[in-house]
Image (cartoon, rainbow, N blue to C red):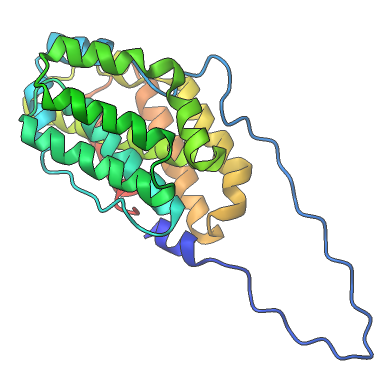
Length: 265
């Protein structure tokens, strides 16, 4: 599990330096620039637009059925793991929000809040999720729910950064995008329809965001033996979604690539 290894990959124990040996000055920390919130990159997509695209392709029910099988344990003590798993739960929530059984959605949102609370108890993102839970309790119609969720998009990334620091943002986003892509690709495979797959999946700015992350600050925390396979999968996904139109085989390979990375959570 990539994130479990990441969590355990601490610094080695310092060796004992003889008293008569000069102590070398520590090397300066390697700094690499990474823009956590780049202007113009839509890390949080419109759920209204997503569900309109799914409805147009007849994929809403198939995607929701797939999402119903997804369940992580996001409330763990290691913030990186909690962030990525919470993101994956958010990705499933985004896919099922307007069509799933209300009880399933409520359980999902409770897990999302538990994950956020494990990062920062009663932080700003947790408070937002509590508001969503209150809305769900009122059993809103799908259009009202999606519009309400979309209304929170402009402040979503700022809220996450305020909640747990900018370092959790790409991890939450990665979990969400990977899970949503895996579910949507799986729904296409279940339905046997692949029309418009390119327009649904092709998001080059998102791909570049994660590629830049792995090449900069991500390279400093992801174990070297796992960084290579991660980068290969990102490049594979980039190539697959670039195809227009995407074939059934390409959609299947996309689902496999996403599922492989999610399996590392």
